[in-house]
Length: 143
Image 1 (spheres, rainbow, N blue to C red):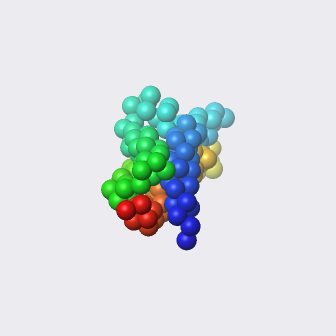
Image 2 (image 1 turned 60 degrees about the vertical axis):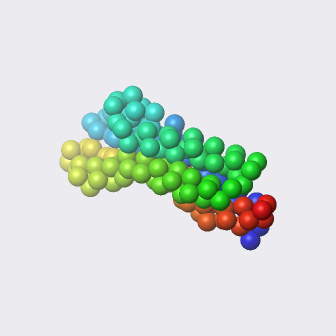
Image 3 (image 1 turned 90 degrees about the vertical axis):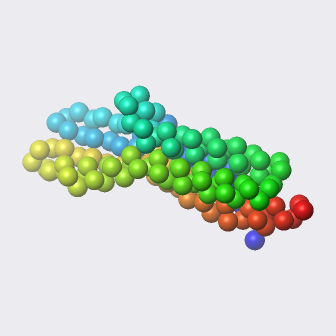
């Protein structure tokens, strides 16, 4: 497999995670009102889980840049950690499924749904994890 694929996966995965952080994660429709939460608005409301996603996205960008400039074997561990942080940060998006199962009653008119931000963030986290698998191939080519 081409070594540049892993570099692109790391770069685009971290960018997707960063973009997904600012998109809506959860949409709640109740009694004619719609409330949407993104990772940023969840942090402003006091949630701690999105900090993991934000840290993972920033360190993923750093690891992707280092993978482009100076590939080293330790970047494999850094990309794995950032991918896991991003996926942990989507725990807020997982809460949407629990809320949907608990509160989706048509008689009450409450609907909870996923937003694009949680999906983009999950895809970015998986891309970061996959890119960590190819770091060894890239780093050994330069030694």
